[in-house]
Amino acid sequence: MARYGMLINTKKCIGCYTCLVACHRQNNLLPTENFIRFEERETGTYPNVGVENIPLQCMHCEDAPCAAVCPTGATYIGPGGVVAVEEGRCIGCKYCMAACPYQVRVVNESTGTVDKCRFCTVTATDGTKTCSCVEACLTGARTFGDLDDPESDVSKAIVELNAKPIAGDLTKAKIFYVR
Image: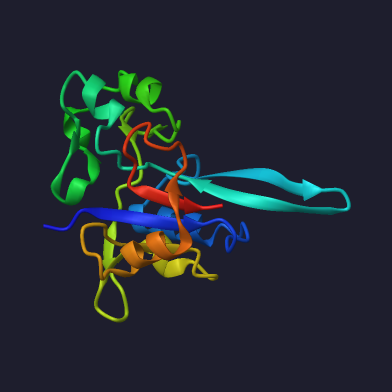
């Protein structure tokens, strides 16, 4: 079975929010719900300054703190290592929100349940599995695939670009960044 992960190259990200729009459409999110959050950081020194756009979303951690604290088991690690939420079991206690070191969980205002990025797998034009945010990215800043397949695009890119999880080994995140 695949162990899904993603690479986000912040050097290519232009902050256009196309990934966010694709995520909203794929997941039928309310305007107030965002599975992807952007942070901007100033880089360089005057007069050579720039802005780094850092998209943050669920890191699909191997030792997910959100799943560990969920009293009902609504948050769990499913097939492919994807951290998932079973909406019908969520009681809206927000323990998962407090436990997430990345602060990427969101409350669905209409249901009171807590949700997050689902690594929605869609079939790309070449027949491979990908996510709507990856498929929509205008600059190719995102790559999705099987982390256990050394021949997958994501595995090759992680090695080639020396990508690392944004917080090191804090949670064994499956999203890798080039910064």
